[in-house]
Length: 326
Length: 272
Image (tube, rainbow over all chains, first blue to last red):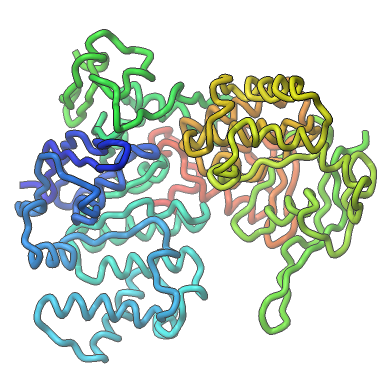
């Protein structure tokens, strides 16, 4: 049994101008101990998918159209509220993109960490002592390599740099000792030098604590730095799923190839990045068949009619494309 | 040759609580030659955006001089400022915030023309359409509003608006960092083509060193309000001399994992 299993999951958002099918048949498995990256551009549904794992999408306007999400064998979509609480507490830890908006500016770091720890303890029926909470907070802050955790407890978020705030949020996500860490664009708001430090921390934590990682990003460089496997999403669908090395060396889907060709490389200044013509489809009226076909140079008649399934193109390498698979 | 835009010993600082001051721009000497593309790189808070605001005269300099085509414009006002306003235009980072949501594409691009040039209604419409064509937008976009455009399309409108007064230089503040990579490549292509066609000079602020290397002839590296290193883009980015430039380069994640290329370049240990 995989730690996380997503099967034919479909999610729509209802709006005044119609219904947008934002996730359209997502198939994804994450094994215990794996580090998987989900890559895609604006609007491809990667963040909505991440939030679906904890049922954080507000319903309405969101609506599940079908499929299943199982975490450690339990069906997330039909969970009772107490079971869902337990999942959010100790099953899956989540780190969001913007460390500024996820910390309360009027409480100290110590107060906010304590709140998380008390909530975790309350869920298991314990009432921890103040000293125990303090000790655990310091331990967590030390785990994310923040200097002088004791003095940090009394500080307010605005006195911390972006990188430090993101470390605090990672510490909070680890507070419930989750089995799966979901990080949604954890370094997008950070400077490059800070980004590489935070990524090194994440890589170190998953190795040391035997965590499973699901990293959501638009940046292929970030995936290359910490993930073993990459899932590429386009317009609400998984289009390719491959080990990192294979994806960079032998991407099969035309969209993945386009993404790789669009990234400028500092070490190859003569490589001219090429954009992908056209723009992402309106998900309220997506193109029939393969959602990428209007922008695809290899599009064939069948691409306009039937949606390609995600099939094995090589061992461990799945692609949803008629042109890429025999 | 007289530089198009030059600063000399430029200073600007901001007040902090308890009487302290932060030196955002601390003695910067920089020159932008006509038609040249100069990249300005550095981390958040290093002063790049303040420098840009000083050059645009959106922020007053404390000391030092700014010259446009040889003329001191550091404290110019009114008519004396007009050549700078026409000659130097800006494109900002976030195209979603840079357009008035209630103004159509036509209104946005026409506004600088109404201010800078007296054109007949007919000539104005022709010119706006010409500008849209130049940035690769079809005429049907004229009457659309920002919310009907994608990020890349909005940035194209911002570029058309900047081109409207017929500038000699564009100051570009992270023009692609809010865009997807596939769109970024299109905007970079557009900028390179415009530069070639119009002989524009660019001051290109970015933290993406790969993009800078793609687009710029020369690079200046800023740290804590000072330019710590400048030179030809290939030289600075391939053989950095200053320690800070090296730190910055080490932090760049390669678009594909380095081990695959068999390179032992540093940067790996920081990221893994």
